[in-house]
Length: 73
Image (cartoon, rainbow, N blue to C red; front, top):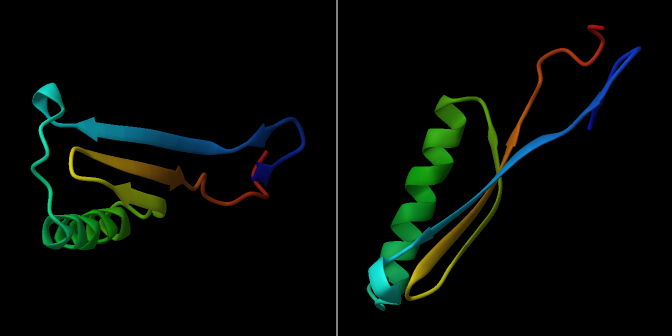
């Protein structure tokens, strides 16, 4: 959580990617590779991948967006 004189800020994005008609298409190999890709993308955008979970038919991501210098008002 980031705080300042007049604010408290915590910005998270909760993303759920679901396959069409909940088909079971993701294997463990797919999920492992997708996690690698998502972690690399988060590093490029200077965000933090807090949580990655997946199943045969969905992917769940929780991404934290930092707000820069917390000392700024």
